[in-house]
Amino acid sequence: MFVLVEMTDTVRIPPWQFERKLNESIAEELNKKLANKVVYNVGLCICLYDITKLEDSYIFPGDGASHTKVHFRYVVFHPFLDEILVGQIKSCSQDGVHVSIGFFDDIVIPPESLQQPAKFDEAEQVWVWEYETEEGAHDLYMDIGEEIRFRVVDETFVDTSPTGPSSAQASTSNATEEVQKKEAPYTLVGSISEPGLGLLSWWTNS
Image (cartoon, rainbow, N blue to C red; front, side):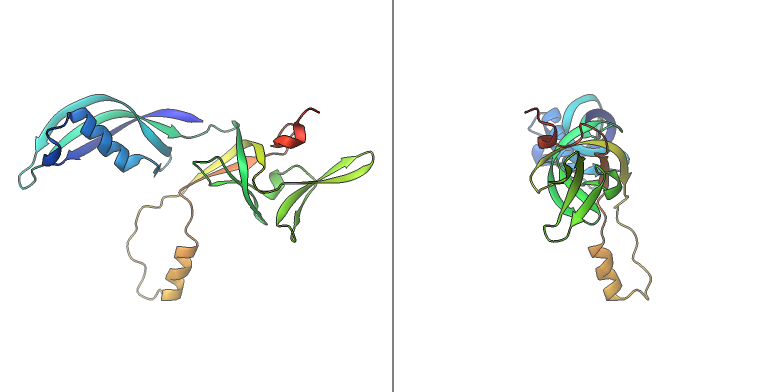
């Protein structure tokens, strides 16, 4: 679920922090810059693990701050494919079941990856597993807030870095639609279409 990623960055330390230890100032600046941010094709940054190397610091003309090239390791949330995770159902829609693990909410289980046969209950706005038994079908509801065990089957990174202005012909309404359709920078796709996966309550031994 969590990995250590080696990174390199140049950190600017303003003059009023010179009285502090360099390592402390650099650690604070790195966490300000990276913590709770998604790095493209890397994952969700959590916190600094350690600093492995500090190169020489430089002060450039016209800028009283020091600039230091830093080699460091960062704790990153990036589950491997086929990893089993447990989260809570955040919401349900026609697109599938949306899951949260507390600090990360962009997880979706699409309809085709649910326990089958499944149907979407429009009235309750939840997905239902129509579990077949000898006595007939039983509806098992995937209620919001329930704990759910799922397998990570895919991931999607979207480059959300700023781009240049769109063409002059683009209308204000189009720009508004683009804002509304803004994609998450990092999304996980899950699956519960195998025994043992799904709501924890389904598989509790009585």
